[in-house]
Image 1 (cartoon, rainbow, N blue to C red):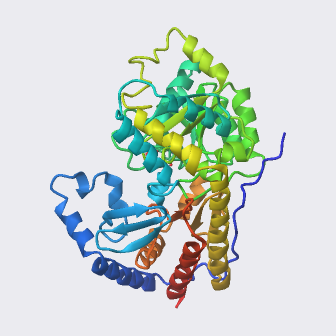
Image 2: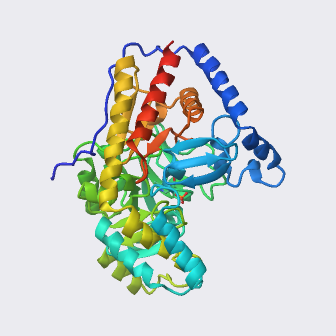
Image 3: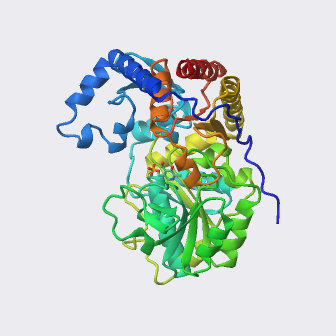
Length: 470
Ligand SMILES: Cc1ncc(COP(=O)(O)O)c(C=O)c1O
């Protein structure tokens, strides 16, 4: 079996001095102070939020937007490259980047030009007619990720949904297998966690059509025996996975693990789907190319069209031929695969511009170098303050987690969550001009991020740590 290549660069582990080092009362007081600053410096955002409740569900355009710490979200004014301003005139270095949707930076020039040309000059955003950009994008995704036959969606969620349907159709098997605490979008089958008593629906699962145990098997990431047990039932159509978990902190694969996943899925007749929506940060072809992996299907979304909605799934040529030849599979009408605006001319123009000119091989080199710098800066702060936390990097993204050892499974990483520390750090940074992803304090580099901005984060993070330990 080939050696599993390490994520580049890898996790960092800190030696703790005292796990009980955090004074919770002091932390609550600090959070109160930071909330006060946040409210005082964002009166217009607060007012806009309070005025929005009447007709917006939860007072926001999409309910996740309530999750920004501080009691109300910032309201966007402008965003260019790695910089963002709010309607109160505050300016930020944006390491959130739309939770990866803006990994190409905000409104990159090449995408702006392509979108203007398509929408304003040529005209026609959505026509149910193909444009030549789509074939270019498909060829580039094939070059980057391996699978040679691509189709488009508007979101990563839909890419996963349709990939799952195709996998079921091809294998004539009912179930999929996912990893505990994964996130693949609002895909019914994926809201399952592993517990010592077996699989259960994830807490808060809204209106599940059936108990997800009927559709899904679940294993902990990096636990090869659990995967083998799940596959041995012989009813799994596909394993849907991120090559590294990114939605419960970052959990990297242990050496050799992903090769074993590939071997076991082949052995048990299950297809292997890599969701590269976030792990695209590992390089121009995501983890799949960076680590020389061979999934049957790749799904992706969020960033590939520079902020314009687009997702995609790619099949290997033999799978593509089989699904096209399957007389029982209606993939051109109402068979459950496809969407009216998917693959539209505007998305395809934006995707081509993004892949051709923005998220290029050389841009990734620079972005990953910046994430190296970010990770090293945070590591220095953790070491010098002897804080019992880790930072894990995956290419252009990095995330700190409040445990001394890097988590090896979703369950371990979930247990290391600390909502108070998340809120404190997030607000502390926002109040000093640094924006991280709200759900999990993830930082992502885009082609426009600068070394000075990375160093500014390090300095503010160091101050936050010092205040916490004072
Ligand atoms: C790995 C992964 N796949 C899919 C999705 C779904 O993306 P979207 O909400 O844009 O459909 C997400 C969203 O966070 C994700 O993290």
